[in-house]
Amino acid sequence: MHYKFYIMLAMHPFFILNMAITSIPSLIRAARNQRSQADFAQELGVSQSMLCRYEKGGANPKVEVIERCMRLVHWGDEEREPSVDELANKVRTQLGGADQAPLRVALSKLIDGLAVG
Image: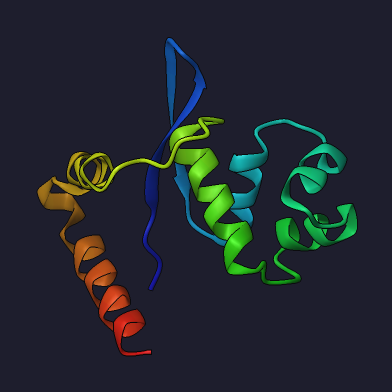
């Protein structure tokens, strides 16, 4: 079962783009945001060849890489960590519609699974 995660990607302070993030490779590419693989790999602390494998789905990135990419996609290059309230408001805004009910159920199951593990 596939769910599309629609994420607001800030490309410019006055321009917001809706992007469908459906996999780890698409998350990595969205976070790279047109930067060269070499530059982005250095920022993530991985080799360019490993970043290429992440983007092609040939390797799974470490949790730290995924978290960094999610932070870049959601918050840009801001150094500060978003507050719990900011994150909750973003989730409410993005997943509040009736058409997002299946995604909310899937996320709930994922969170429950992570809590057990």
